[in-house]
Structures are given as structure tokens and as C-alpha cells.
Length: 405
Image 1 (cartoon, one colour):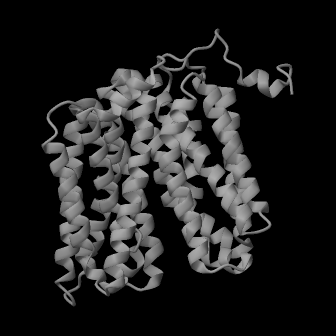
Image 2: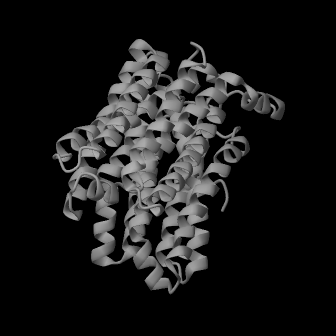
Image 3: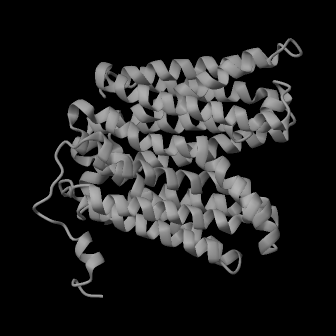
């Protein structure tokens, strides 16, 4: 293709359209992109048995699709931020979404396990490029006084994926086959791409930074402290979330039919928490918001742990409100964490936010591994204690890090 190609012309920066503060509603197309990415990333776990059967591989091998995605995302996020630092932001977002849509089509058409694995690696790198860039674009477009709310719009896309996208994706997979879910997500990605090209103003790339400056950012104690909080927070969340079905059955005495309503409640609470934390970060500061959310999340985990000791004294009356509080606080904290990073190094937001994405995926891996160790030991009721330990460490990391951010 040449530059005369209309698609490439649309992707070219236009000096006549640049992004200052824009209406937050315009960022909906970033929310939709995050929703598509979250749906694909989370729904695969529910499709693994059917994927394993269809591709004639073991469940363990199918599980490596999740591991490969997480590792590629964690490593790829900072690398892609460095490689794409000089690209105009809307163009970068569009190219990342093109890659994500293509990855979903390749996954849907994969003839074998190797093909699906390659598709998932492309999906991970595309997602690792899009999510930090979307957060950075939102932070710059919202203006300083609306930074938290703008960032929360991107995070809301991931939250809504947990609320609606993942259950719907699994239902589609059960009814029409797992390949249909990838076709569906490809359609969502195409809609997001169209909206990005049609509605989002251009935004210049951030100031160029040398490799030495990027390494220096990674060595900054205040940045590392924020990233440590992200790792520990997500580890606490995924210790329980990965095994929520077993937890509510073994501790709260709820049957499998209760899992979907519980997940719906958790997701709705997460969406509310994301929005509230964005406004709270703008009004009272991101650090104070993180402290409050961290304290509430720790309270929820301790309720899980202590509620397990109440059996058989109607623990659902204790557990269900705690699950709502957990969703509200844990996802609210993640949104405020992004605002902390942007405030600490505004000019390096794409790099620091990509590092935060890696921290989130590292935390999810840690939490899932810790939860697996507990469940393998036949002690599902101890998940709350392990999550509380992670949550306490996260809260202490904020309190001991000083008052910046």
C-alpha cells in the first residue's frame, strides 16, 4: 500500500486536529476498546475445556494459553511503550486495535493449538500497546482537573467486561462454540477502531526520552512504591477471584447456580467503585483515595476469613455484602493507582502506565498461584487470610511510601 490508501491517510497525523481537554463522552471509544480487551482476556478461562477438546490437547496445555498471554503482556507493555513512543497517539491506538481485531480473527480461524497460541501472543502485544496508550490519552485529554475521571473511563471498560462481556462470551461459546466468541470480540474491536478514527482528536506523542531516562524512571523509589502497591493489590484480588466459585460453595454454602449472580454483583460494584474513585482522586487526591480503598478491601478480606469461621451460622449474610465491598474497593483502588503514577511523572505517563500494566499482570499471576496453593491443600476457607495478607502489605506500601502522588 502507499500513502494514497484511504485507511493509511486516516491514520496519518493531522496538524489541524489536536487534543486539548475534550468531552469525556468522546473517550467512550477507548472504553469500548478496553471492554473488548477485557472480555477476550478474561473469558478464555471459561472456554479452556472446550478449546482443549476441540484442538485435542490436554487441559494443562490449554491453560498455557492464559500463561503465555499474561507473560507476553507483562513483558510487552513496557517494550511496546518504548518502541512506539514517537507515534502520534490516535494513530497508535488505531494500529493497536487493528492488531487486536486481527488477532481475534486468527484465533477464531486457528487450525490447531500452535495457531491459537500465536494468535494469543498477538492479542497480548496488541492489548499491551493499547491499554497504556489509552490511559495516557485519557489522562491528557481530560485535563488536570478531570484526570481521575478520564482515567476511570478506560478502567470502566475492563470492569464492564467482567460484568457483562465475560458471562456473555462464555454463553456464546457454550451455544455456538468457542470460535464464535473470538469473532464477536473482533466485531467489538472493529467498532472501537471506527470510533477512534472518527471521533478522537489527534494527540501528539509525549516528549521523547532517552533510554537512560527510562531506566532512571524504573529506579525511582516513588514509582516503584506505586507499582508494588499495584502488584500486591491485584494479587489479593486474584487470590479469591480465580477460585470464587469454590470459595462461595465451600465457605458460604452457595451452589453453582449462585456464581453468576455473585459475579454480576461483584462486577457492578467494581464499576461503581471505578467511577467513584476517579472523582475522589480528583477531589481529595489519588493517594488518599488509594488508602481508603485499600482499607475497605482489607476489611472485605478479613470478613471472608472470619466469616469462614461462622459456619454453619448463615455465612451468606456476611459474605455477600463483603463481596460487594471487595469489588467496590479493589477496582476503585486500581483506577486511583493510575492517577498516582501520572501525577508523579506526567511527561512519562505512557512509560509508567505500561509498567503499571505489567505490575497488574504480575499481581494476577501471583494471586492465582497463591490461590492454587491454598486450594490444592484442601483449605479453600483460607483464601480470605491469604488475600488479607496481600491486602495488608498493599496498604502498608502506600502508608510507608510518603505523601507524593
